[in-house]
Image (cartoon, rainbow, N blue to C red; front, side, top):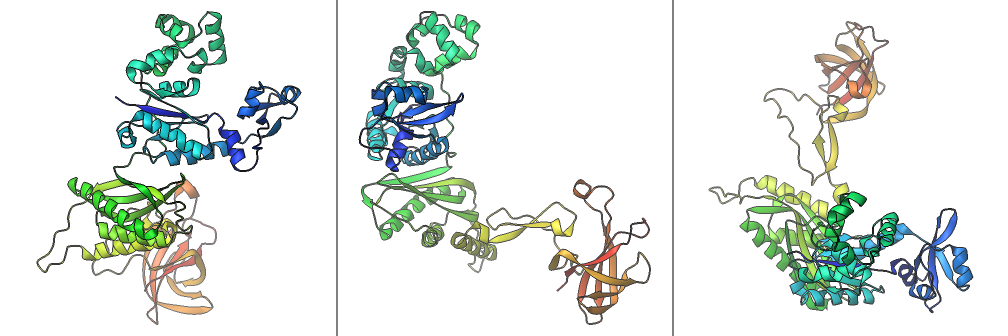
Length: 509
């Protein structure tokens, strides 16, 4: 049996402005307006405005005629949604399965979580008290489906409704709790229906014939007979461990031992499954509701708790926005969103573990990435392209490495270490029109070619350059001083290309 807790914030837009100082707090009626159908209309009201008989959808001129001292401000749906997302992040201290329920609502999947807070009713009351402390009015209900909990939170006083109680409670709700289209509600009211219980007593086939097959399914969801799973803000992690404290922790020195304990417990869980984590997220929940997220990534799957503790220590030291405990952290959660198979390293006869070099390199990259950020520690990734300038690209070092072709033993390298982008033009003298270069001039200096290898002909990418683009003939050449260059001729005389040109593309070591 699954249970969902729905939260409804009826005055979220007006309370947002009141907390930021943009709305009166002396009981003066206040409303938010938006232009609809060529008229300014009310879209959100505070309790004082509702008490004066105003309703959403009323034109501003009619509202001022009824309540002359009404204060208005423009609605901001983007700011409301951003605030709702921040509130949803605060609710993740109760369950990681938290989803938006717009407008102005949240839904929490609390299966297996409620007992940690004293049961469903205690958890519901605690959430209402938390939102009140944050400055928001909240209504909450617990029910066996998200739609059932939403209807009971928005159209009743709330409470905890188990499956044997949900149908009776929903049956007493008005038709508006179905949240159907206006023409559907009008048709139902004209037919004499007043409550959802009246609909439940009638045959479902008649409703399907009149309003479509979706209507009976919507009834089942509202009555809790059908469970429409929610889509949480973040995907559930592979592994998760957490700690809650009776007294908030306000000192950095007190946090690090707790982080070490969380890493030890996570390492034990990963070892039992033969896995290692590639990403570790630490959520720090402050007593005043603010949430701080700190994430570290590793190049290879690991469960080395000492190394991970060092990464978190460096990450906390290098934060651009220093960790502010405020009134203290009352909960810490460690999530492992990515876990992969991680076999234990086998030791050699001399006591050293195999692949020590690769492990030390990956740990170095992990420390550099943790301290300087993903965007500043890069590596080359091989691309599926023939053009040398597009054969590789820079990606974060924590990305999966690509496989590069192994060099042929005894052969010179096919590609130079230094590559010019774009290629630099040179003046070339060749013995034959389409032959190798015999002399070239680069940066006002003339080089006589003693040896030349080639050509290596590369055709252009027809998807980006078209079918008529000139080909390239590449040559590896060596001058009299032993320096090696990578030259190419752009175009061929034998094809009739107009004025083929030479370029220097790279330098060999």
